[in-house]
Image 1 (cartoon, rainbow, N blue to C red):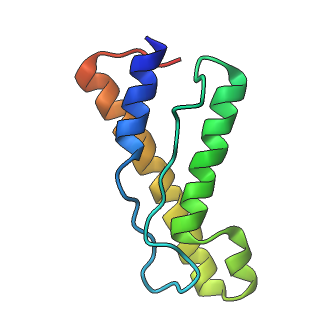
Image 2: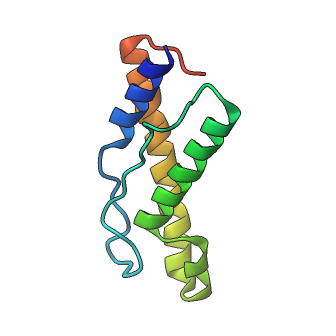
Image 3: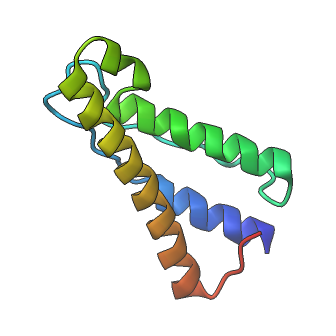
Length: 103
C-alpha cells in the first residue's frame, strides 16, 4: 500500500510546475523525488513537505523575493500556494482514481 501511495505521489508530482514567467529569480520547472522516502513515517512525510516547499520556491521564488520587490514577492507567495495546492489536488485525484489509501 505504501509503495502504491509513493507511486501515486511520484506520478502526480513528476509533472512540471510552471512558475511566474515574469520573475527572473525562478526556474521553469522542479521535480520532487520520492523514491527514497517512507511516507508511512512522520520523518518521511516531513521530508516530503520540505521537498514540496523547496520545489514551489524554485519555480515561484522564495519569501526573500519580497525584500527585493514587493509585487514579485506577492506573486511568488500566490504562486507557491497555487503550486502546493495543485500538487495536493493531483495526489487526491490520483488516489480517488485508483482507490489507494494514503497515510
